[in-house]
Amino acid sequence: MKKDSNGKGGFSLLELLAVMAIVAMLSTLAVTSYFSAIRGMGTRTARRNFTNALSMARQRACIDGCRVSLIIFNEVAEFGPDGKVKDLAASYVVCRELGRISFVSGDKLFDEFADLEKLFTGGSSSGSAVGSVAGAVKIYNLSQGSWALVKPGAVRAKMGSDVELLYSDDTFGFEVYALQRLSGTGLESTGGGTGGGTGWTVGDSYGIEVMPVQALPKGFKFNELNNTLTSDQALTDVEHVTFEPDGTALADKTFTVVSSDPNAKGITFSVDKKGLITVN
Image (cartoon, rainbow, N blue to C red; front, side):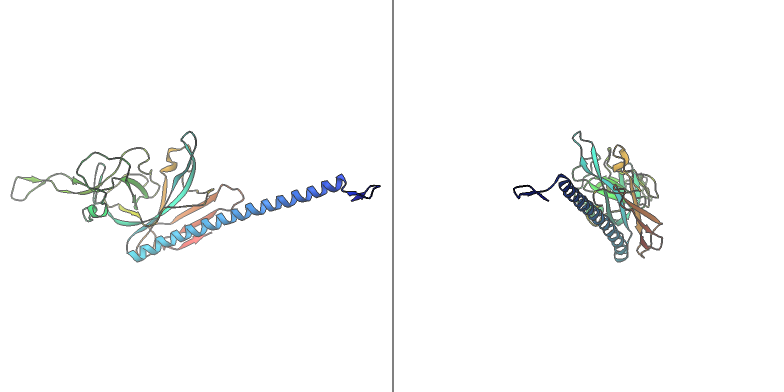
């Protein structure tokens, strides 16, 4: 600081530039530290929550004595002004097995060993017309790792062809309750598991959600899914892992969580056939 002839002091231009440079450097360090902290929080949250979901699926399988699956998929996070998908949310859910499909006829799924009219009480009907999407229930194919929307209430339908009665020439058609799939674009997944498709077959396990759908933090995604915004399969592609009542898994499975931030390290979740969950 220099003083003039009147005794008044002031900073020189070089001193002011030095102070400004120091302030800019401190601001840069503060911003960098802030974003590093946010990135670390997001990574820790993704690791902790998805690990807990895998552990919960395995525990529910052992406690409930039935198959329980964890299924991953994408949901719409944001629409653009033009109505097109602008961002995706990497989501996952734990599903409990309700039963197995015993017969398939067109868009109807039968389970003759379950009380479907009590499990799906959204209003039963005997009509064959497919209703609107409003109130539809999402059921998951735990054998193939896929999902489909069905009418909220079970419908009465004839299962198979008429049966000829013994000691009589008369025939009789058995009517039972069934789940009726809704038809249309985006109303069922493309499949991503061992089944490789949406076709429901006899013996497939089906179930519903036992916990609310959760999502990874913004900016994170599952590497195994189709994450292309312009692709029709971005919202129907799925992957899954299924745990047996003894805690084992049907097959080895790996889920990889990556971030849109190139500086963030990816997380790998591995499940072996013994049910051991490893996180790296």
